[in-house]
Image (cartoon, rainbow, N blue to C red):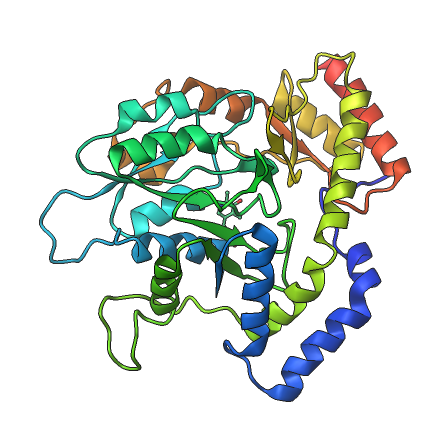
Length: 375
Ligand SMILES: *Cc1c(COP(=O)(O)O)cnc(C)c1O
């Protein structure tokens, strides 16, 4: 048997007619940038996330960039002051820190909580300096960071908070959805995210009309009114075709989440008597299971052995961010963030996508048990 890490064809087959109809409406209208399809998706996603505003953008990465710019974190080439600092977890997808660098700010890393893989709130305060402007907690693998703790620190020190919700659409903590705690949240519609488009897409969500308005301006070259630029933005707009397809898929998101949870429970149960470390959802959290990430001994051998028997796994992520070559100028060294480094060495993501069959789940679980026991 061969089990892919991720597969979209089965899902598409079930919604093909609806998606095609929605895309066809955009084609017939020939209205490709902004317009009713984008506005409809913005309202629907904001409603789904329990926030007042949504602003469609071109990717999750651009959602982070435009959020930073909208909150005033953007270094002018004429600025001779030292750069602003933004605190980010040392273990996350690269974009979280890459965006901070790209707006001319300095990413300052904090170690993660080994249980959730999310930023360890108790490690944030020691990183704050007079240059610190913001914190970007990431809700990794579909589970919220401890936002009540992050917000307490941010409020105490007057810092902005951008939630990286690329993997957490629909996830909640203490009954509140991810992206509703901070100044804004950044969603990604990359095809492998829980709500994936027909290409790249993203959204900034916020309870603040002001922040949303700034993102609207920034996504269109910082322009408002037309041809008047108060600050420099970019082309971060969402295509109407993406919005039309995403509006169809949004209706199914909760049912897909439930299937992901079913799959996670299947694995949890299968691994409970082994020494495989399974993901733990902490009190107060409802995960959306974007990834199912276990920890194993001899991870690289386990990965290779699993692939050789048709179980396609992946490492999210093999290198902690402070050890990335591009961030060498920041002056970090190995050992600075032991939990992030340990996660990078031990983590292994198994197939979790909603359409996995019982047979596939059983195959993955039994191969993982065999391979991990021998490693
Ligand atoms: C996917 C992802 C992003 C970037 O989203 P894109 O839409 O691919 O640009 C940012 N942060 C995290 C944590 C992600 O998983």
